[in-house]
Amino acid sequence: MKTYKFKLYSNHGNRELHKTIDSHADVWNHFVALCRRYYAIYGKYPGKKALMRHLTKLKRLAKFAHWTQLPSQALQDVIDRLDKAYQKQFANPRRSGRPRFKKRVRYKSFTLKQAGWQLLPGNRIKIGKVVYSYFKSRSVFGNPKRCTIKRDAIGDIYICVLTDYEEPDLNRPTTGNSAGFDFGLKRYLTGHNGHDIDSPQFFKRSINAIKRANRAHSRTKKRSKNRERARLDLARKHRKIERQRENFHWKLAHLLTNQYDEIRLETLNMQGMKALWGRKVSDLSFADFVKKLVYIAKKKSVKITGIDKWYPTSKTCSTCGVVNETLNLRDRQWQCSDCGTIHDRDRNAAINIFRVGASTLDGEDVRDTSVSNPC
Image (tube, rainbow, N blue to C red):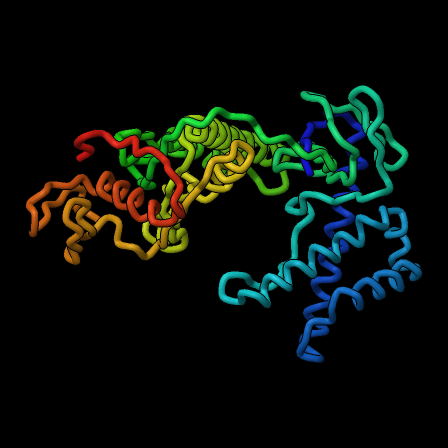
């Protein structure tokens, strides 16, 4: 399965899509309220099938007659999303709260499955009875199965077309190299072999522009046109940072998977890192990068090995194996009390990640690319 994302041309015809998304937000809020009332009375979640039957009954009432103008499969998809949100809450109540009400401006998309849309020749797509044009940046392979219409914070509309096309594996020549990397705040990646990647910190670079845009937005009068213009200006700056970060992640993922046959990483405790460093961790976005790296590695037949996040990679001496229990986060360099080796904290962690990850190779022969004296 492969998803293609294209941006629609901006014109007055897109107003109908904005109204449709707003209407789906009303459906979402109605069923969130319904589930909360049901739980308050009966102490349980009504279930997906019961919500589907209730949706059919509501469409017969005069009060909700306008819902009949919406795509039926898109309405069912709203119930699917709500059910997934509740199932996620039941599976992990501590990390996932109950589904919330959403303002119209914060509801972003609706999905059309088999019916209600059609890809036309060229760069056109038919949604409902209206034909729209989009920026066709690449060809679409496979049979289209589903289409999701999304809008971003600026108000631009995108279509995401899911097809049954299976991408062939990239016949990348093997290099026989492997490496271990440690994530950090000063250096984005520290390699056990000296291959380091600096932290770009795109949000930090643009923090002054973001502050100015925030101040300009807060000074405007609520519900005024000036406030909306200021909001759009702020949203454009955030979107630029997001795209810069994504571009960096994709390029870095391709760079690493081209050089190594196996990449060993530490499993991060993201919640703990955000509690300590907050905005900086969100700016670096380690979790999103790992997802992209795993996706690219799968296509290139590169092995990604993760080690236990509780393994003391920074505290363990990579020379003799002694654990320094007194090491704290402010110590960037430390000396082993047993063998006397002076370690760079991140480099030492990367070497330990590489060695611990080697225990999961199951007899595979992958060449060590470490330098003679990485410390």
